[in-house]
Image (cartoon, rainbow, N blue to C red; front, side, top):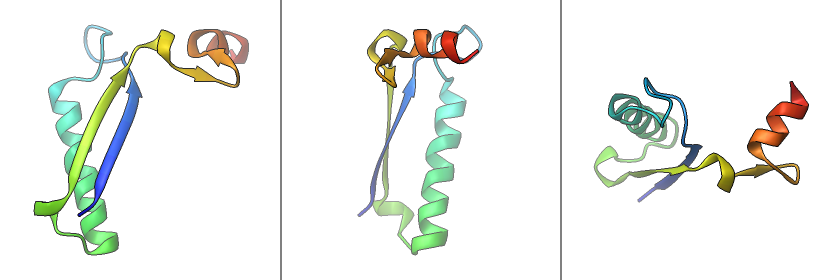
Length: 73
């Protein structure tokens, strides 16, 4: 019974406030299909959870993600 947790920053989408319901559905379908194809896991027992994290709550390399992106640009 696979459990996949996808964590993404809360941005993007048409309003800049996170992925759309359609994009999330596509992620869930794609991850489920991948586990089924590669590991022969049953889709009916595969769980996929998507967590959106505010940009100020995500850090990379010791910096909040926005500062990291600015220095990387």
